[in-house]
Amino acid sequence: MADETEIEGLEISLVEKNPSPYKLLFAGGVAGSVAKTVTSPLSRVVILFQVNSLVKTGYSNRLEFASGIMPAFQKILQREGFLALWKGNLTSIVHRFPYSGINFVLFEHFKPHVAKVTKDKQNGESSLTRFLSGALAGVIASTFCYPLDLVRTRLTTQRHEIYYKGIVHAFQRISKEEGAMGLYRGLGTSLFVSVPNLAFSLMTYHALKDRMAKQGNFLNYFRIININKETSEITVETSMMGTLICGALSGIVSSVVTFPIDVIRRRMQMEGLLEHKGTVKPHGPLKELAWIVEKEGIRGLYRGLSAELLKVVPMVGTTFVVYEGMKTFLHE
Image (tube, rainbow, N blue to C red; front, side):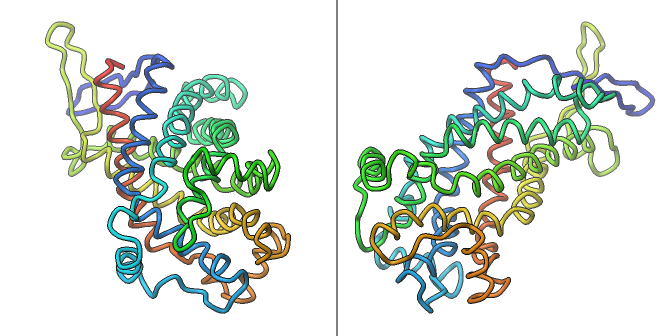
């Protein structure tokens, strides 16, 4: 990033050197894995809220998994035990490590190329360039890692009947019962979620980070000003708290925008299993959308949003904090 700002009469150049793609891949992978593990219990509750009315008995009248977040946790603890809060987390990590790493690497890779196409005068740091770069990165990362995301949803929603014994067994059984393309069931809907989600998240995060670096007053508490004694070069960066706040706010924005589509995505990922069991008839995302609105109202499209927001604040915040910390540790 190249930009200029002024602090107490001093003109400062904010320049980030080109990062090594291998280090970015590792930093992004670690960041995503740590964040997913920290927020795994909330992730499981969100998914159970999203798919319960579909999973319970196909198309039953039982729409609620629980009456609230705390009753949901109590229900899981009573029926499955404490470790069940992390059910499917290994799959999440296996999915999240390459997914996050690829996203961060491709985001940085695409920025200069997109900037040329959009004639970005801010050296690849305009909101449009960041949004489009994030969207392109999201398409590739989501498509590449999608089978792991589908398996994670199937494992996470298992409660009474253990249909899949683990990651490998799930891959084998889905491929056998639903065909190789069964591993990509719901990919189209997933791209409608993950692509704008990532694009909004990265765009908002970097915009807020830039704002914190440029503004004074109370924002001084959320940034660090470094002065090189040998060269007198002054650099400004956000503090860990500033990074956490930028990440959390970016996560809230992207989640609120894309959550209804995420509900459809999760339910489409369960469709193949329920069709095989004979509890639902084949249908697509538009029919699922119409059914939810008819039976549950618009509120059904936001079922689990409160838990999602409780999850996304620490998850996205932790992702960016760990990512920035790993970059510093790896001297990037």
